[in-house]
Image (tube, rainbow, N blue to C red):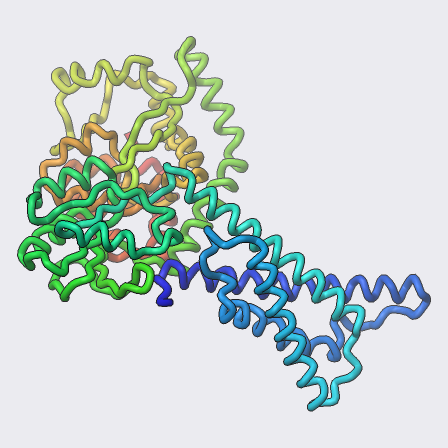
Length: 468
């Protein structure tokens, strides 16, 4: 079976986790052995894990995950039963014991600490089984949660789309929500644009054995301009923005045209760093949260301290973004009136105004210090936002986009800070320039770039650069 990049990365992560668990299990085995020696009056060895056990670790720790992979232990985790996992793990342990036994005979390593070795094997078995149960439970619940499913469109002609779905294993489609079977012969590219926008589609899979090449090319262009991944099981298509890479759906090879950062260890670390840093910042800034809540309640009594608004997340999927309230309670109802009386300093669909009359005095103070943005850390913890990424816009502003290319800024997770905020915020009045900065960030993303933007954001906040 050909594994997709996502599955291969997940397998590598699980293998690394299991290797660490096995090392930890043998360390526990050694500790128990030493405790037993103390109780029986035999004394404690001065060194840690002795050389007689180290050679076992050099074999067991790296070899066990490899053997487990060969036995299919990391496959079909959403549908596999616990009994199958136990059988595969027992077979793997027997293979490891055989290898260790043969090496012990040939190298004459007969002084292995048997108690530590035995306890280490038992604890390894228990830890890996528990890890497997946690992983399978989490993946199963994820497959049942409609909110976490990926919106996918299958595009092709006639019966071939349904035949394609029927040929796939349920393990593959468990996390998909099939938004539509889009017939390229009976619909045009404008129809596809509306489907992608309405359904917040993450990728389109083209099954194109009998489809006219020109229709596929036009449909791919729509995906490309919106930052939606196009997975093609047909011939090569030249693009200007998207990067062609190979992947697979089940055993079917696919050409993927991707304009967003490719799934990698770097991208996974970004997600882990986002949540860890957000939690740490929330803990460290709790006094500011209390200060903001008290100040808002004093100056604007009778209204909530927090403000929430539906914003466009990745691929335009709505989510509720949180901030400290800095405006009068009926601020959204007054928006049209403010636009009419005071105008808009930002061209395009986005509204920006230096001295917005809806902002009360303490709210203006919170904005100058960017304290009003702190509740968005809750969105980062939840996974709706990242620390760095294009700023999320209200749904009505996204609907007002005049250019289809503007939607490509929705192809990555929105962030609390970005090039725009770190580089001047309200000094930029051109929406086209704002979008250009966001797209440049998407096309050149790296962890180092995120780090640079975070560093640039600190003085921008401390010295109120562009904050109004």
